[in-house]
Every structure is written in C-alpha cells, then in structure tokens.
Length: 326
Image 1 (tube, one colour):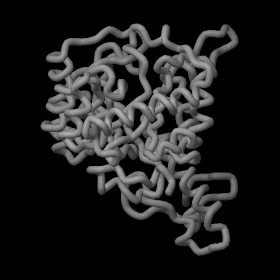
Image 2: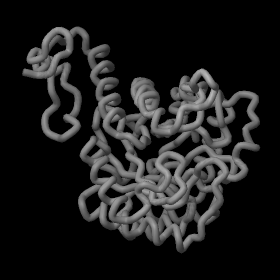
Image 3: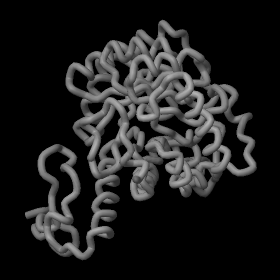
C-alpha cells in the first residue's frame, strides 16, 4: 500500500481523497519570515484562515511561535494567548485545525479548543511530555525531522548522506513515540525542509520522498517560501528572491511532491497548490487508467470550491489556445 493511503487516526473525512491534501498556514506571530505579522491579530487570523479554506485548504495550521531561522522562543502563556482564540473560532466554523507547537501543554489546550492535529516541528524532542500527551489525546501527530531550535539549527547542518540520515532519525523518532504509547496510525512524518538544512540539501530529500515513505507512514512536505527556494530564484545580483516571490516555485514543489506520493503539502498561498495537487492527481490517474477512455475515469476528486469535479468535456467550452470558458 502507498504510504499516502495509510490510515491517519482521527481524520475519517480526509481519507480517500485520491489526491494530496493541502494545509494552509495561519501564522499568529509578529515575526514570521513569510508574512511579517500580517495575520497577528485574532480577527485577521481567523479571516485569513477562512480565506484559505475558500481557496481549497483541507487543513488550517495555526501557530503562535515563529520557527524562522534565528528566532527565539516565546513564553508558553503568550503562545497560548495567540493561538487558542483563533483555533476555537476556526473550529466553530467547521475547519479542520492543526496546532503548530512544540509544547505538550499548548497541544493539550489547543485540542480542547478544537484542534484535531498536532504539528510538532521537533518531533517530540523539544518537550519530553509531548509523546505521552499525544498518546493520551489520540489525535494525528506530525513528527518533523529536527535537530535543534531555530536559533541553533543552522549550526547543526552536518550530514554525510542527508536522505539516509533523515530517514534513520525519523525512524528512531517513530520508535520512541510508539514506545511512549503513540499509536502508529497517529503518526505523519515530515522531512523538515529548511530545518538544519539551509540550502541544497533540501533537494535530495524532495527527490527521494519515496525513501521516507518507505517507513510506512504518510509524508507531509513543508517547502513553502523557504530559503532554498529563495536561493534557487536569486536575481543577477545573487540576492535571494523574497518570500512572497517564491509562491510559484512552491506550487511547483507541491505538484511534484503530490506526484511523488506526499500525503499533504503545507503552504502559505493555497490556491495555486490546491490546483497543483489536483493536476498531479488527474495526471496520475490518467497514467494508471489510460485504457479507460470514459469521462468518469478522468474525473478526480472534488472541485476546489466543493461539488463535482470538472471533466475533460468541460474544457470544450474553451478555445484551443486556453481562452476563457464561453
């Protein structure tokens, strides 16, 4: 069975999607690298989350502590004050909410407020109580590859074989989590792009997602607006492209990750990636079902705004050069 199809405990409505899921980022921080605190106030964060849902997000990931390179920690009470009202409001509106935290106490309070997923960039290493807490909560748990907090992680970028070492360290994390009582079905793995991997070492991880999928758990890819994309898109002066100028490249990574079997992509700009994963699903389905020329065989999942997906027949309302429908 494809790792993407492995059961994730507690998310029945997201099973059988036949495509990679899209997680939209809701930063409730004043110092995010990607948006500089644009969504810091609770009301604006909730409005932004609802906008991302409208653009096709399956999950909203709410975080109250920046993990940008060099960032320091914030007090726990401050993190709670930032995320709880946003999580509660979005959950009340029917969103599937993930809490982005490394603290067990924040995870517990967030789930009580309506969060249904815990996304921990430390994979349980930052807080020894996290594994036990997640085991008791029984919610899906995203365990990311991590070697240290944001203020030290760039000094920890030492690998002989980044793919093998990330795989082995994630495997060890899984063993530790399961040993602490976490059900294997709760675990989603994340290669930790950009964390103790500032530049070119991210590309082998993306090119070998199947190696991580070999651990038997779904894989989440979080490439959105990260430094390695900025370096790739650097201008003639060598300056990296700014974060928002990396969104097209992020969508390309989303499409390729989806084609490679990623369970979910985590992105700041949802619309393009929501389209990208649907393109990858349609492409993959056509490749597998090429002997079946029926319309149904070329229809993949739901449309971004809900309802039935468009089929190839709908495209006949466009001209041969991609003009607007009708």
